[in-house]
Length: 124
Image 1 (cartoon, rainbow, N blue to C red):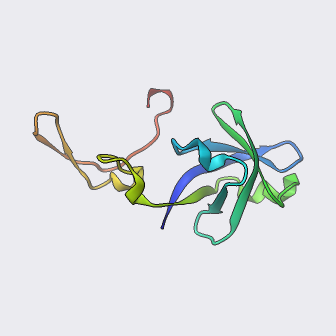
Image 2 (tube, rainbow, N blue to C red):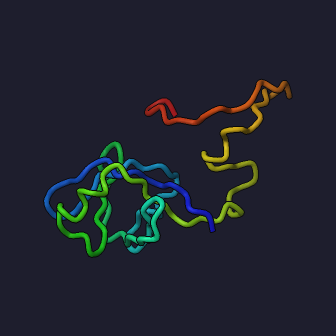
């Protein structure tokens, strides 16, 4: 299984351990109660206890992290989920697979190589 970045913790919310998450996935089920996420680069597993829409992202609470002090150190960290690239629909790729890929126009003309991928907000 590959680990895929599905969100980034942007801040804390209130005193009860909720965090503001920038969502980096199209799969809403990644943040459903009972889902397990991992902190980037760690084996630490976080179980989603509760989540709610909070434009432009989500508010999320994790089991056993019920105080603001417990989550303050997570700000800026990426949340990852285990995923199987073989489950993607044909012709689909993950963002991290795009840098280095050949870019081709619809008429077949090779335009170059993708150097980077970044979020642009509302114009995605």
